[in-house]
Structure formats: C-alpha cells, structure tokens
Length: 241
Image 1 (tube, helix red, strand yellow):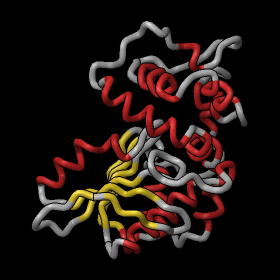
Image 2: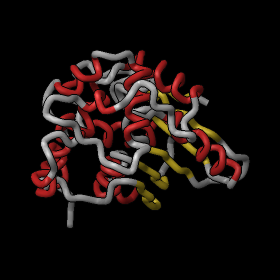
Image 3: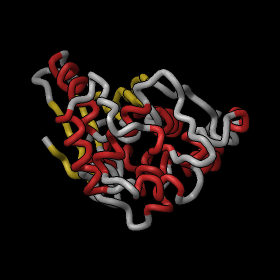
Image 4: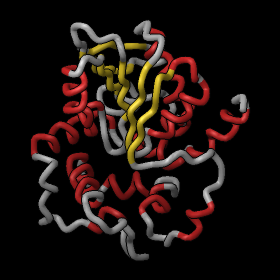
C-alpha cells in the first residue's frame, strides 16, 4: 500500500499490514537508499505481527523534492516523520534505522518520546549534535570530508549516470577498507568499472535504485547527511534534560 502524506510535500510511504498486530515499526533508510532497502525486513515483520512502514525521505525515491534542496536538513526529516505518524493516526512506533537514519531516529525520540516505543539503529551510534573532533583526524580524501565540501560530490556524481553512481557507492561500501581518495582523485574514481557488484546486491536491485535516483537526483540526498548535521544543535538545545 502507498500512502501519500503531505506535511508540506507529498511523501511516499510504503506500508505493509498484518491481520492482527497493533505494534508499528517505521524503517528509516540511509544513503544512497530508498524505502526499497527495507523490503525484506518489512515482509518479515508483517509476518511476525507488526505493521511495517518505510518512507522515502523528501527528495529521495518517489517522494517530492523540496523547493529548496540546499536548505533541507535533519529537522525536516524529523518533522516529516511526525507528520506521517499524525496523518496515519499512529500514536507510537518502534524506529529502526541504518546509516545516517539513526540521526533523525534519535532526534525524533528525544523531541517526541511519547511517540516512541523503542529505537534500533545500525551503523551510526548516538552522537550529540555539535562539532565532531574525530573528523579532524581523518585524511583529506576521506569520503565524508569530500562530500561535505559544497558542490564537490555533486560534480563528482554528475560525471556519471545515476545507476553507475549507485553501483559505485555499493561497491565501495561493501569493502573492508574505508574509501579514501588521493589528492588527484574523486571518490567515484576509486571504483574500477570492471568490479562486480557485491553478491548481496543484484542487477535487479541496481535497476530499482538507479531508476529512482534518476528521478530524484542526488542534490537533496547529499545535502541532508553530509551538510546539515550541525543544524541539529539548536533544535536539541530546547529539549528537556
């Protein structure tokens, strides 16, 4: 089922219902992902008696792009999640998130604890908003450092079609070593075109991701996780201890 909920945009929310369960799980994706990333888990939890919901964030997949992608932030994702729950009349949920998804999940739980039954995250631990000292220890070519530079990732990705960008990112992040580019390289240059996809990521998966990123582009997708983390600081200063 696809629900369209308009906090301020049309967001596409995939929802699987079970017959008897009343508990709701919301899955929050990362980058370069979409609701499709959670399809197997949604089905498994629906069979286990949960209602499973997976939204595409604004500017991702099937959801509308915001009018000003460069101003989109984690605050918007948190507000969108609240709007989704309100529009579907869901009082409380479990949140499951991966990659950068834990950041809006943790923030939502801090700001709206009365709406959260539990939080499960993978990949990124809780980090209070603010300057991250560890980033100063990372090399200049580290992928996060590069993608935080205004316009750099957009220019790097813009040399390729969306399907190739997604392919390259999944190859890079299936490796044990962290993607670090040399001074004369961009992150996309780290992937040999002859490198096969990881065995858990099929050509069918790649086609699905590629088609949706062809629609949405990468502007908002890069803006939120790599350019707006510090904007959460003021938002959380108002949160009761």
